[in-house]
Amino acid sequence: MGRSSDAYAVLRIKDYRAFITARFLLTLAIQMQSVIVGWQIYELTKDPLSLGLIGLAEIVPFLAVAIYAGHIADIASRKKIILIAESIYILCATSLLLISIYTKETIHIWGPLPIYAVIVFVGLSRAFLWPAMNALVAQLVPRELYANSSTWNSVTWEIAAISGPAIGGLVYGFFGIKTAYLTVLSLLILCFFFFQQVKNKPVPGKSKDETLMQSITSGIKFVFSNQIVLSAISLDMFAVLFGGAISMLPVFASDILKVGPQGLGFLRAAPAIGAIVMALFQTHYSPMINAGKKLLFAVLMFGVCIIGFAISRNFYLSFALLALSGMFDNISVVIRATIIQLYTPDEMRGRVSSVNSIFIGSSNELGSFESGVAAKIITLVPSVIFGGCMTLLVAVTTAKFAPNLRKLSINPKTGHELK
Image (cartoon, rainbow, N blue to C red; front, side, top):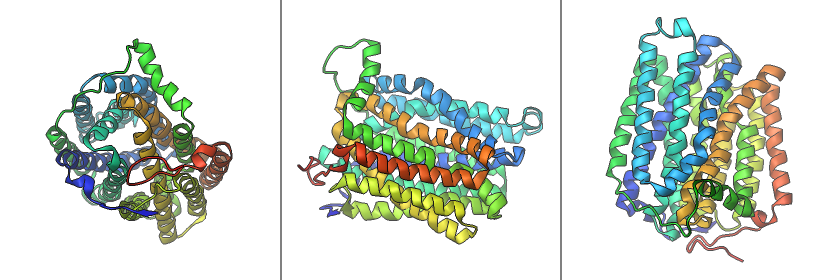
């Protein structure tokens, strides 16, 4: 890895600091809410499939509007889109709090259905939020700092991902579900304030006139015509789809490791602990030299860690393996995010980001659903081992059929490809 000349350069940009603070608070709230909802659903149903249905409830509406949301992010104020989507997140958190307050009138009558209904709106909001955020952040920093910003995006995300699950599990375990949801709501309101501090940026002009359908499909065509971008996001998508054991952690915590909601919070935080160590390392040592080979190796080792976690029956070993998986996953995240920023034209960032969110973001929820179904059919541990093995196969296959990605190397100082 090449040493970065100024690891903190991007943090000197005022708008970026406000943006990254808002994103940190948003991620913290979402991670907390995920743990709280997962434990609440499992307490109600005691069924691993019900955990998978949480992901399905979010991903179906997300996929339904994601491409259109990317089009909107390229023709409308990206800051305004973010604020509207964030407002919907606040309404969803408020609804979950009210459902928990009036338990007898809702959950005791309808079961988990009202919770799933709220998650549907979370999916809709997320579909518009992420392409707008990813498009806006590229306007806040110069090209030569794209890799630096990708790394700091990852650092702050991982810090929130460490804190969120741990805080969510601990607050739920010690103070109850109402206090937990109230904490989530407070963080989302604070997040809205910081997003307001970011200056609005003009929407880049289009290079050509397009109809609505042409605009919507152009992002898809761009991704599929670029082998490096397509293979990078495909690799990450299938790795997360088959290798993610996170959605099944409530079952591991409750039935296998027997550590309760507090232990669940720490298990959820474990991948982020490893990831933040790697992310901080990458702020000083860029992974972009020989980026393709590093990306493939990281995904391969991620699969190995998932297989080891499935076999483990010791809480500390399980925690360590999840932390290692987070370290390797972070290498993949930083490289992929930088590739997308470097190779995407400004006027297409929203649409390309929406395609990327379908590949990567949807794989988390589809992976949750896949894990739930597989656990139901072949039981929990074999299903996670199978997922890890599939991740290994994906890495080997991509290395063989995507030579441009395998050979990719980028100068971290200029952001240009090394030949």
